[in-house]
Image (cartoon, rainbow, N blue to C red; front, side, top):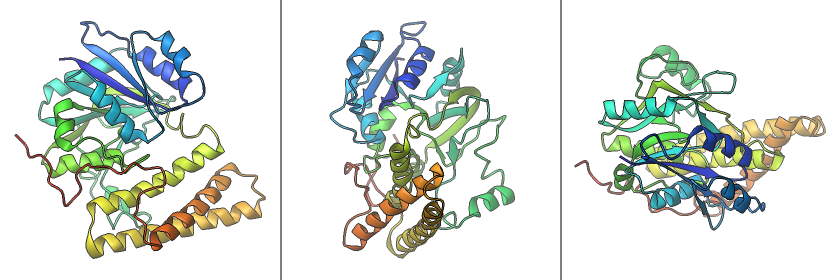
Length: 334
């Protein structure tokens, strides 16, 4: 079975180089390809970099339309029956990819599979969690869930010694068949950055499909290698992270419950980001995290003002998607 490794890049050439070198192609049996989708980095490095990896297929996207859009572009171009979506700041140690593929073969009923992810110092990275609910919008609620029911809600930042089946696994490393992705309707392009993986797993769960993470394979994820490049990029990433939660709510929670969920989340973020922004002013903008939060607060004010004016919950950079929502029919299990 041909494996297509799909990597989405945006000005992450150093990280991407390490990533590609850790996934040598073709595989030991010629059963592997890599497809890199560049989200219009527009920094003059695409052609030169692509020339250094002639065995890799490079696609230059028409613009930076987000991670989900690029994943769909890569999936359409891929020739493999099996798809592995990976971030450019992720690397595989010797034998780790083979272990992940062995797990997929051992558990054919698992439709979306991921593996343990650690930082460059070996500490577990968050690569799964439970679905967001109105309850989890309350600060401290998730910690209480893990304390009361650790079996149902395993801690996402701790090492695990057995296969676990959380609600969702991170799109930074996600293995599934091309056929299953088609049945799900592809990645939802309403999400520009973040929560697109949560949405994909939610749709899979609604079909009764198993989603799992195996500790038998471990990958190194230098999390934030792309999104923390500079102040502007980090501010956009944090803003889109918050917006993506509203997009998720609008797709999967309807009526009064959805309205209350939106309200609680908005109030929470406006207050917390606003406090950070105020402290930023008092410190004359000398603390970078506070400067980022100040920028995020201003962006959120504009976002919520547009919503109050009759706009939808999509972020300013999103591409409207045809992916199924709660009220749409999803291809049933065969």
